[in-house]
Amino acid sequence: MIEGAHGQRGSGVVVAVSLMAVAVLLGGVAVTTVDLLRAADRAQRVANLAALAASDVAIADRAQRVANLAALAASDVAIGVVSGRPCVVARDVARQQQMELDACEVTGSLATVSISLRRHGVTIQKRAAASPRPSGVWSALAEESSGQKTGARGIVVYREPSDATSGGLLELEP
Image (cartoon, helix red, strand yellow):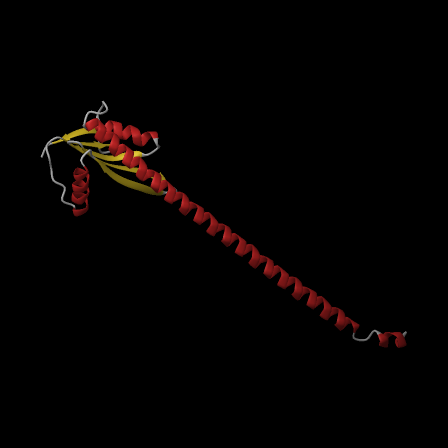
């Protein structure tokens, strides 16, 4: 028996080295698989963010269109084309599109509105002005950007109800 044992000498080392090589190979495969899964997860998150960004841009564009429509509707009421109260009509236009009217000012035929929409935890706010006289819109936007709003008799302001106010239409006196 001793003679046969000499032929097997060192085979345990070969088996041990082979097992270590398999273990290293499996470890490498596992690390590569984990890296691929992480990369796929990262790519999915980037794709989700890109889709959300595109969606937010589309929503912001839609919000601007709604602000424009609300301002036009309020201006139409102010000049008598449509019956009603300008800021109530503007509020109804915004609400039909699941948006809120934050502010509405009407001076003569010039209507300036601000609407908002909350999406993905972010508030999107848009402003618009409308008047049959283009110069009225441009002067209103210039006053707004310079921060020098001038008071005028008969300005109507609409504010949504909040905890501090009852909301509604208010007549402001200069």
